[in-house]
Length: 267
Image 1 (tube, helix red, strand yellow):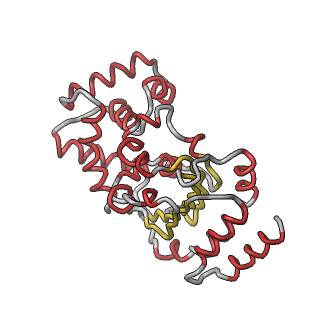
Image 2 (tube, helix red, strand yellow):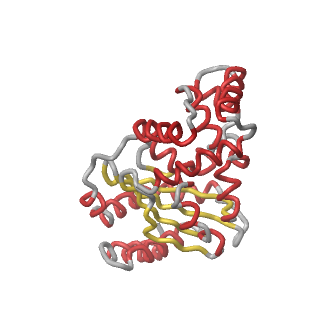
Image 3 (cartoon, helix red, strand yellow):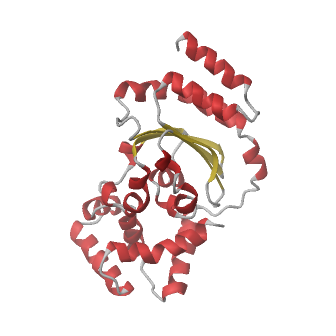
């Protein structure tokens, strides 16, 4: 790191466990990597994400954060999906984890597109088994450019330091979490149980898996690869889902699922 970056890092360390830590952390990031926006989230158990800090040059980045993202659509966020799939602490690029039809997904069309974010990379830091921190660094229309390889490499170099700082500063989140949160499988079981009670519709395990992948933005070929079946089989699952739910489009499926996602996300 250059001398100014070292000085800024010293300021971050000095600010640990104080109210100015987040701002010092962002200043350090900006000395290492040009960024347009930062969002720091805490996921504790199965509750809604808690925003620990948000900063952006472009107002639209966080315009619908509280009203849309935190009320349930975060459950479709690719970074959240990676987290709940058990990914290790590390740095993740949006382009590496999005489904193949991300720009056609409900998450993108109903939320992400309106943020005007062009690119993201997120430090995922596991504080404990039930607590994780997401430090999201973004580029948006205020700069009009995505991260380049050299910037990604710089961000990757400081990942161990970021993880150590986050684990120290937010260590109290692990203390207040008493465990006992539902794991991913239990959460999905409850979701489909609520779906059945709400609409009187029962989907098989394969149909349920297909439906969730559809609203997350995966194409039939991507779903086939993830499920280990043929594309034709996925098309059959899609047709069965439409028949059982009495719908004819992905948008209608999303409209059925979203109220339950919001309900469960608020717990």
